[in-house]
Image 1 (tube, rainbow, N blue to C red):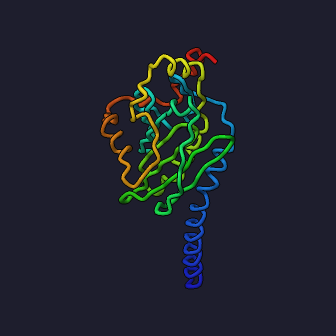
Image 2: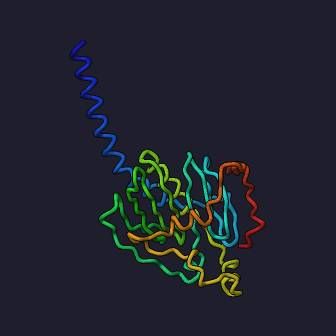
Image 3: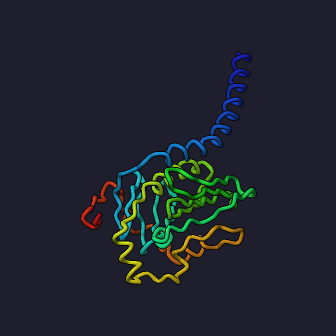
Length: 223
């Protein structure tokens, strides 16, 4: 009996170390899996763009080109940068050695970066890709799932050139509005908190819109 207990303890100890190592490696694997795929599906249509919202993720609120998504008690903040897309402007990113994870992304002619930083007892995820950016502050056990969800969303974004050219050409957008531009993160970058204070008015009382109820309103997009 004593030998069995010792063997179980050794097994649990070994398994624990292995899982921790796999979790770190999985971040690279998740990026390869989610970003190497060409996702042509979409169930969320907006002005100038459309994308695929994975099952289990809901739309809480949106304001022009900023959206708040909800998954597993976590809020994801999505910014669509149609100005950079229109002018094909690529933002430069330098690897941040002070972060928990920092990587430059280049898949299928789409560029960006992923940065994960410790914030108190949680992790701040900053994920820019395909002329859009997503941010979230999540618990450690939700980091990999969040990366996977963000990867599917960002890689699936399809832009409507006709609509965007019309918006930019008619000066419907105020190019001086910095809140719609994606800047390179710095140690003093308060964009995320500023956005939360300005736009995140959701108090949990409204009905959450599930992806299963979203209709594929293709007629809103002229392609």
